[in-house]
Length: 307
Image 1: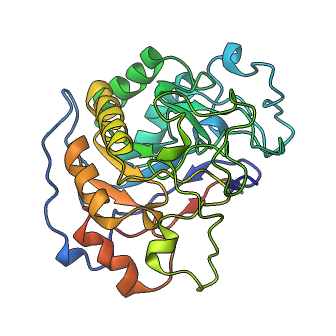
Image 2: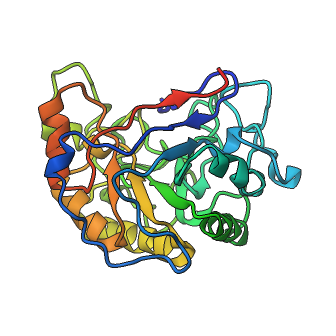
């Protein structure tokens, strides 16, 4: 089973245009910031106006990276790649700037498994990670990403990276600990099933406690064990390389509710920029508790433009 992340409809542009706010913002403490990107207008801060872009759905600047022959590209199917990329987004940064935006939040940048386990959904959203350290070829090269960030900074726009430290793509069926075939696995060093939890799918029906929510598979996607030293070091080092190597000014943590809270804090310190996370829950007290572990813990409101 795959994790359905098709939150977009019709145009499919994910956009948030709102003053950055977190639950109980007066209680937010300053993040452990150790890095400010050269040439950037500064790190993500309260009051920034964020525009969230689902890169694949925004603008196609390079048609040569549309289709790699896995059946993942079909502009007529909302579940497949449509061709948007970093060059296309770079071409329209002035348009975004003119909206009054101060920060742009982009899709995850890592290389993806092309399709879900059942083949019905492509990884256009960026949550079926195969290799955390390699760029998604559908979006372009690392040089293209660098150009995007540099151009944004030149316009006074901050850049936010969507990070996915909770899981990889769905390589292990159910609670299995065996890759079948052995080649259907995440890239090294995560191609070892002992680095994952094997407790089955998450049940968001109120029956699971916090510990269970942090070890279950979200929509079938293989849940990483952040308490394992290999996983811990790899995720922190790899995302630090993305953030500080390219020059991002903040990160949004996907599925933060499914990750141990102390680890979220240590991750923010490791990458060196402010972080906020997806805590998909209606309980204000529960959501606001994440501010003790991340600079911003609340899930931001989302507006769909062009629907």
